[in-house]
Length: 297
Image 1: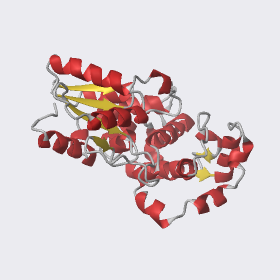
Image 2: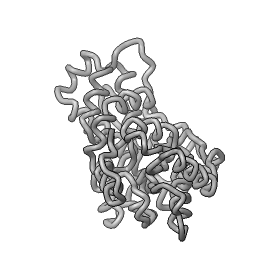
Image 3: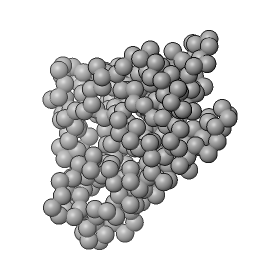
Image 4: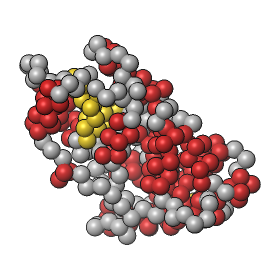
């Protein structure tokens, strides 16, 4: 949800402040509050739920988890509406980091972008920008998406390794053009490591080769948690790969392609489809169990 470029920590209100806001919204008729990570998540969900469900950005995943934890500890939350936390799964399941609260739901795939990419919205997104060169090279959009995911998996190896080993790798300067050539579909993982190494405060963080890093996460317990491509890859990485292909001659001319541009098109296509995904079916069940039905607009 929130991207590597965002620094929402300092913007995040405290759990107490968020619950105070929830109490005020309850007085104005809110049936429930859904706390999400960032503003883009809030904009997406506001168009999906009925008006009595209020969507509040908490700032980041930690803030979402904190407000739910505070709510769960209350002995008498009578002045509060029902509260649900909604956050990205990231690699928490593989790392044993998912919170076990009945009032928090994580995406069933790695992040909300991956949930959107699991729907037919990807066809809307690609159809919006692909040119004839694209159509000649890929007869099926699914074949192209498989290629984009394969490239994103290369980066995911390092993301997972960094998360599990708490390396804190900085991906802010990540540029897929540095290690992947769209016209030949050639990826050089060692160039990726070299590229990322230059962005780190300490070169020792990424002193190992790509193959060594890959070996270290090849643990059955980890890989079982990440068996699905859209659990393994970060959604925004996949979108950046698609943007790279469009920049390199497969997209409509005159546009400045980036992951954010494609994500906007993806969100437009995905909004009416998300309620049918596993993630949002869980959310619908959560509301039904609390006596609130027909929550999707």
